Length: 205
Image: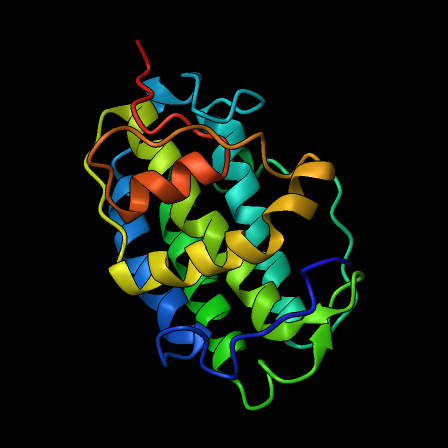
């Protein structure tokens, strides 16, 4: 696919393995997830197709499925299971456990080598896709529930490079919406959000 077979080398744009970036992104995201109240699960998010509950279930699917992709296993993306319903009040701890397994999977020898997934993309690119979801959806959830959120800078740099390579193709596949203009004085996170079609100034109203 056009623009999707490029790599930035084994250690990406900043010399860090994808597992280290995922670990840092998880540490930044988990306080947001733990801060979601039961009464906030029906709130809208910047992803128009997801409310808070649906977005949390989607993130569960991402961190579990991308463990298998790190191991070069075949996966299928169907409708996300209702992990919140399955785990009840324990869901934040289970999410933390699965995020730790995601990091371990991408730290395994050979995880970033070769290609993986149905689209046969470079493994590093696939790992960065998990990083994108973990980072951007943590922002979505923070905005939806009125919480602060600051992702690690190194991860944002990696993701801006990823979106720059994959953006045109991802938009034709409706993975990203059309890019929006970043507000004046926007930082790297706000620019990244705008590049994925999000309004960096979005609020729940």
